[in-house]
Image 1 (cartoon, rainbow, N blue to C red):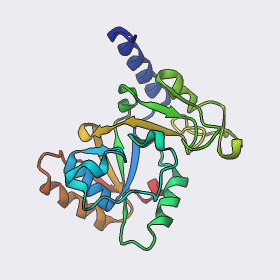
Image 2 (image 1 turned 135 degrees about the horizontal axis):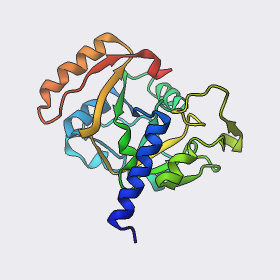
Image 3 (image 1 turned 180 degrees about the vertical axis):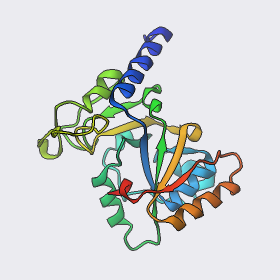
Length: 220
């Protein structure tokens, strides 16, 4: 059984990894419709919980058509320092006929130390994935070599920033509901979308407004 002292020690260890690697943010991308639901509920909800939330039932639009990792439907998918580019590209293709645009939410890195968080070394659906919690799980994301899609070895390259995971498809699985309490900013690709979101905050007084910045390279 994990004691309070054990939990505190694990939290401190994860915080030391965050500091040593210079990790400044954990990201979650979503459509503009998804963002409306997030602001309205003051949280990012797992896919399992989304249809149950009355506020979002009429605007619910998932990032992708299906989730193959159904055992993990009650977890929010996040990534460290960079969005999952492969998943984002697939989501864009799925929504290419829809009138949607994209935003990326940036959370404080210490959410990585919250209870119940899992870390995956590559995309969670790949057979080669390694999942773990705590410091071992977080450190595994930065191993010199990990197995990626089709068990292809993915090695860290010379000069790779310390805060980038070895495989860009590495994931953070956050249980259930991620509060916006540690949301630090929102990124978009176009300035007028930043203006739109800044205006939306007035409609959700229970959600604390954060800076909205146009940074297209976040999505590349």
